[in-house]
Length: 336
Image 1: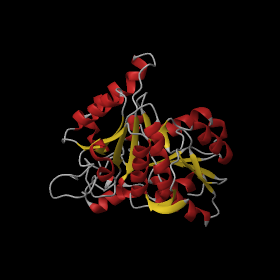
Image 2: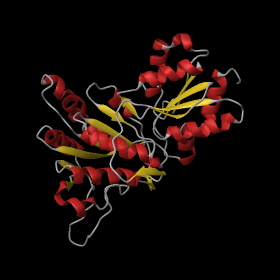
Image 3: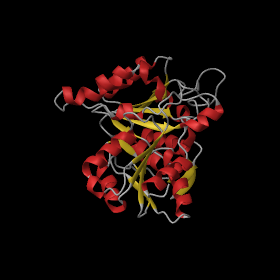
């Protein structure tokens, strides 16, 4: 039975249900318990945006506040994963990967390969990303392309509450390291989510809107920008098909190619920077595999190649918007 809950609640529910199902699932991170259990606190906040609120009361010491040292607790989570546990570690902001990247890309990502397929590292790194929160350049980046580049890591970017719950459950049950990327601006987004546990397989993109003229490939928060643009373009008699990647590694290239072969045109919408991004990756794949189907050059809509501004007016300009998508679609349609 489905009910309307927020993206934030869907993630918290997925964590609770998996911890109830499997006692080897543990949570680690800065403020995930939020001091709950300490003198004077019956129930603390539970992370920066309250995602893990209440879990300490249900699961006690399986929810562990850590020191402010990402290199230590991400390393501990990776080690615990090789020793029979299923840790979910919260890297508070994706920008903080800089102090614990070795533990993820040089250790966790390579264990299965280095030990001849005999090692499993079922660790999930939950992390927040994205601009729009006035959090400045060190707390607002979209760095999922960096993780996507690394063989051995699975990278997940849910765009709806339904996907957030199903993809997190799949992430926890997976036997490989998963980077689970949550856009800060989506936490209050509400949608229908089943009460029961369910898992969404990795590598299966979701065609969220069917169309005949242009394919828009996107992910995360930008899915909603794509739909806003598609609604406006429909009034101009331009029919857009929208593809939500859901996961960038593995990436569902078959669905992308099939859609482009149907429409003959491609716009890729990605909040990350324009160089070596998901937008460039998707564009290259389509140029290589479906060039003959293209009726116009591919267009990318991305953030500019600059740090995220702190000034409100500049940050608003930094984030790709529906107007930019509409213009890109008109360009590939020859109507600019």
